[in-house]
Amino acid sequence: MGKSEKSLLIKRYASRRLYNTETSDYVTLEDIAEFIRDGREVQIIDLKSGDDLTRQYLLQIIAEHESRGENVLPINVLNDLVRSYTTQATSMVPDFLSASFEMLQKGQSQMMENMARANPLAGIPGMDAMRAQQEAFLKAMTGGMQAMNTMPAADDETEAETAQEEGEEDLDAIKKQLAELQNKLSKLGK
Image (cartoon, rainbow, N blue to C red; front, side, top):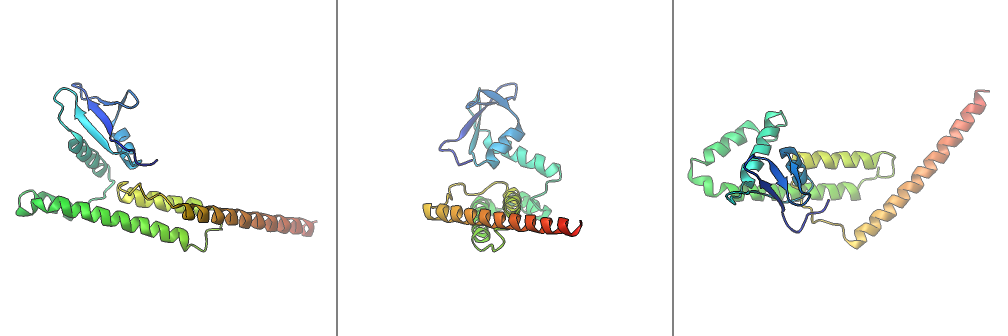
């Protein structure tokens, strides 16, 4: 799913229920986490006061994942974050973290591009599924913080289509060879 032009507005009612204004239904924290993993920006507003609660809920989502054993943040990083609230470094930490995640996202995107271009095994059946699993793993490791506006250029799409067609031709050739081998084996067994 591509990145939306505007944030998805979630309203929190006095009952603490969260309401998706796009779909007119109630959502859970896990639903919100899924929207974010899909590349959506989310804004959570208290209906009564108008306060922006986005940061509070994002921290709650992170805390729930960490408490379930989905540890992304090492203990020493958590300790350093706690320390940063009591030091003069507080003003530098947000910029540093933002730059670090941006660098991680660019590295991830570059690695995926390199894997797609330089993969001599692309024609082997099942490689697309394995590549998709690797992409999902990397996305999970970065918390879905992938730059979603890195759509391939028209030339890249043409190259991808050509590579896919060649892969399908290779697959057909492999299937034909397999059928011939099975035919020969069945004749030997008679």
